[in-house]
Length: 338
Ligand code: NAD
Ligand code: LMR
Image (cartoon, rainbow, N blue to C red):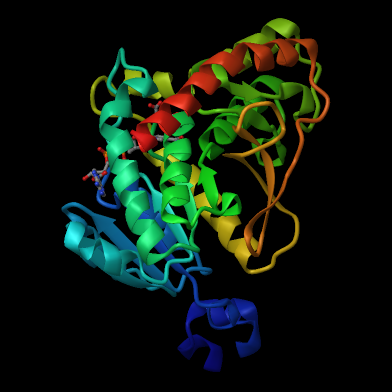
């Protein structure tokens, strides 16, 4: 048949008008740190996303190989590989979404804050380039410690005169991914149906899953809720210990990063009701940045949603996380202004 000679996607869409890759707007996504443990599988997953038309893969080294490899996949996007600082501008020019998984990961015994000394400078320099080459892009910060690197990015953009709080996101989707998986296992419900908001920040006790709002609801004991909360908060450490010195979560993070970037692209394209949790500038609490549910739209953040009703256990968790989150935010701001 005629359909057989056309790309497979066309046959599922039925008509050429429905051919997603031709009707979707041109969208450039740049990944900074694309040759790394997260960067490589994230490059793969973004290559599979039909909303992306150009995918720029940047790293200080190693990107020509990753780009050549990923470029052979027969999906919509054109792959552009860039290596070395002198190519960063080209990688960023025209980007609609920039995803930053650049930086060192933890080893057993380290906290995310122990990465600050190296990663703060990396994020600062990458954000300086973003302000210059793609000041309107939505920026998805994955590099740890997210509780500090997002405030660093905001200060860099403020100094450059390009800051738009609607366009800066700390990626906390992996906390949501974990909370959903762990909850589904305990509640014995289908994981595909589960929703759990996770608020606060992205380190230890600052990660606050709201299991009282989890759906489908289940009658879990307070011991179960406490164990689930702790496991979600320590999810990163669980992987760091299992990898025993070979880094932290990369595959689950790439999945989470791809989910969040896809939500950003859908928002930009005008898809209604796109809601994800993210660490953003916020007035939900007295802290200047806070993770909560965010509605995404054509300009990035359309609405930062409130926390909803909390259980007493969650209220305690909220108060307990504030001092650490506050000091991590202040540390980032201070570094950027030093
Ligand atoms: P990795 O060491 O495997 O990869 C990091 C990559 O960044 C390397 O390829 C390196 O060359 C590159 N890089 C370093 N400096 C750079 C620069 N100036 N410009 C561009 N690229 C640069 O590490 P990974 O496992 O991919 O983790 C990356 C970061 O993501 C770590 O900071 C880690 O803690 C963080 N992380 C965050 C989450 C989250 O939930 N937000 C989850 C997992 C990991
Ligand atoms: C995670 O949550 O897996 C990441 O933040 C990496 C880490 O250091 O735990």
